[in-house]
Image (cartoon, rainbow, N blue to C red):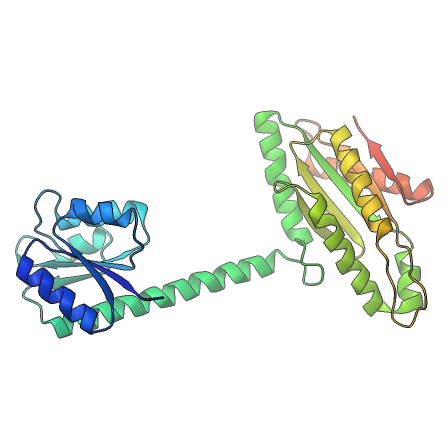
Length: 301
């Protein structure tokens, strides 16, 4: 994608000369006479760098810099011929990426532009890398669901919201039935495939506001904001049936294996501790195991 440059200068000769020079240098460039025209153009055109004179009719270049930085991720190079009236520090404090005194040689301006674009690229790469690392830190490497560390952070946040706004909140904990037997029979690689498939089965059954986690081993959890206990039981039954309908055919086995899960459901009680909330869901899960597995049990207070 071509880099888009916007020139803002009320001097026709300087503006046209800069426009021609930057276009010859390989940049897609637009030029306007005032800050107001620049702001109007930014409503419809994506621009990476604005080069603006400070002295403009109406809104000046520093005010324009302020306005742009408030609403856009755009680098700004400020130019002025009045070195005594404006300082580098003032322009940078407004959010400008560089400050150039006029008359500036176009070759020097081009070097400044290239430096600004290089720093922009490095910043974007750094932000992308940090976002990727953050995502990895909260994701289970096998199932691609969120991990248990993120579960506790997210659940605390949802509990705070539930208490603040008096909204319902429910929690599911589910466990794969006889998973150790499956692993012992077919090996841990086949067991990993089951964990992955169960994660894939859960996701489509949830709303955007819901979130699923690999809690540890063969246990999973699902946080259901804005959901009362009865609704949570319905979600749990959907998940149970979806997993049971999956066909798991281990390598070397002539026939598919049926995998079932047991689930525990509970609803949050206002002002209770997060640990009590989790323990109650876990107790409900234990009840499903005790009653024969492949079922949903709920405990409400």
